[in-house]
Amino acid sequence: MTNAHDTSWVRRNRMTLTPLMFLLPGVLFFLVYVISPILQSFNISLYEWDGLGEATYIGLGNYQELMSDRAFETSLWNNLKWLALYLLAIPAGLFIALFLNQTITGMRLYKSLFFFPFVLSQVVVGLVFSWFYLPREGLLNAVLSFLGMDAINVLGDPTMATYGIIAAGLWPQTAYCMILYLTGLNAVDPEQIEAGRLDGAKGWRMLWHVILPQLKPATFIAFVVTIIGALRSFDLISIMTNGGPFGSTRVLSFYMFEKALSEYGFRMGYGSAIAVVLFLIMLVFIGYFLWSMYQDEKAARR
Amino acid sequence: MFPTPIEKRSRGAQITYQTLVPLALIMWLLPLIAVALFSVRPLADFTNGNYWGVPSSFEFFTNYGKVFLESDMPRYMWNSILITVPTVVGAVALSCMTGFALGIYRFRGNLIIFFMFIAGNFVPFQILMVPVRDLTVSAGLYDTKLGLVLFHIAFQTGFCTLFMRNFIRALPYELIEAARVEGVAEWRIFWYVVLPLMKPAIAALAVLIFTFIWNDYFWAIVLTQGPDAQPVTAGITSFNSQFVAQYHLMSAGSIVAALPPVAMFFLMQRHFIAGLTLGAVK
Image 1 (cartoon, rainbow over the protein chains, first blue to last red):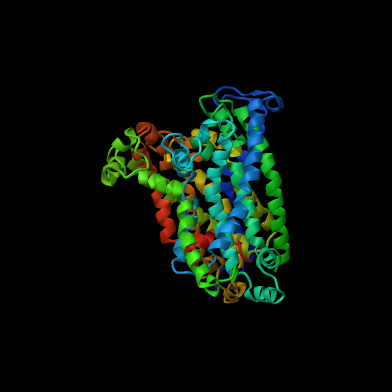
Image 2 (image 1 turned 120 degrees about the horizontal axis):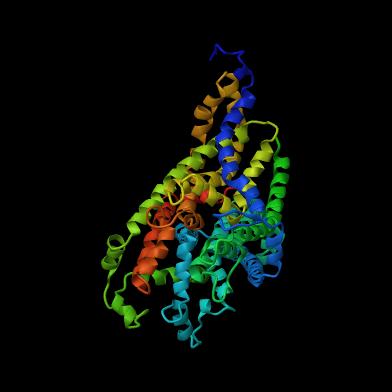
């Protein structure tokens, strides 16, 4: 193909201009809707603002208020519980994946049925579980009374409610980790298993020394999505308890929403301060994720 | 294969396994099975306290008929479609381009832009909430589907770019070099060489984004209110307050709301899982 503009400025600089043009719409969108709002939130967190009238600059006032806010403390603790317990999805997912990694007839269908809670929206998962926990109509208590145990009101009890919600969250999250590990197991090198068998490795030893090292990429992704998922938890809390009973199930993401955008008042500045704290917690993990991806990139440079 | 294939075990172990798997599945899906059973019961069963016994009558058509004919559910569903489909198209289109630029060209700032997309994709929604809501309100797009779509496209571009860029990186680079030697213009390389090879990635992303956006709840309640623009995830709460304590109808309603992504998953399973597990195998 010959081009009349062979020596034109555009053609000479095409290796710079093409990626620029291709990136422009995506980057622009992302800057407007994601990057700049992050910076704006930092700024708003320094103001007292109801979202409509004039904003008053109060410096770190919102952050000082956070320090003595009991609800904030509860939320922070609950976030930690979410983080710690949500990670159970990873071993649970691995366990189910090992259980299902067989080739009996109908296995494909079984695997997809095990996976499909992940496809449900968190809203539906929340509803399904809040009905499951219902003191009178719920299946959980039907089962408990069948086993001769006392009925419990999971979501009405401040000491149990958060765990009840986390259990609901673990359901789809475990399914997600399971599918990651099933894919990983599919690609495990059969020769290494054979070699391990010849060395007398079996069961746990085989899993720990031969299989798990090969599942490392799957484990990494499982960590990323589970940690992000734990810190993003909002829908389930909003649907199942709306932060209650007595604010015992709040987490930072939910508390922020409550402060900034619900009937409890429109404190945009205070809400943004909470969001900034959540963001900084997340940033630690994001930093780590990016760093390990960067290591991979360096190794894969062509 | 690990664990040892069950065919190599004793007959007894095989039979145990084959009965254990369906049992485990029933346990796993128990909360969902309960909801499905609720959704075909008549109201009388709930007033009589007959929650788990044999239903006194089978009311599948009555209950689901009510969901479709006597509530705003169809409107919410339609809103969800009008929000989800344009978002899928927009985010996939934008990320095909960004993925191409970041995957094929070497220039200063390439990795920084790429990492900006990844990092942005991980941030908590709350840090974006107040400014995005302000932006949407001042653009006159509050409580419109367009307002939601624009934000969703922008945010999903982060994840989609990560996906597309890595996919394009794995394509044989010689193809592009060969095309360049032939003197093919760069945009034609995109359109005629790279894009056709991206079909599986596009399919995978499309089903994934469809599910993510259909299931979004947070942005739906931040950027919309009322049945004019709200998608079904947000609408279901008003639906439930319309039918308070009528568990048969609420169950039927949430099953209807959950169905489209479930159907999408079962129809496009291979693509869905390929997309979700990208990077799980090196």
